[in-house]
Length: 138
Image: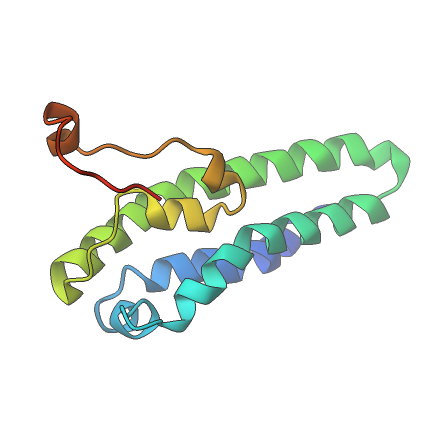
């Protein structure tokens, strides 16, 4: 069974890494512009979640697998809903304090890698109102 304790252990590191990006000193160390370690670790968080949940579902008895799949899908949706505002806050904080220009939505795309690369680019209001500006998207 996918218990709350198991889900906590699976999501503790990825959500913790996103939360550390919102803290003043730690975000500077983890997400620095010269290649902080979180930039390299963040794209592996979502595949880590998927692998851990897949193995847990695989080990469940057949009669509990349906409920386990629903629980895992709900947990993944909650992760996506939590990660979006956390990554946007981290982008804002890093851009405003460190001065590293981060395209809006970049960290969210990394937090849900490889699914994030399927998402269309996020246009800011300035880009939307001025389509002739040269803009480079990820």
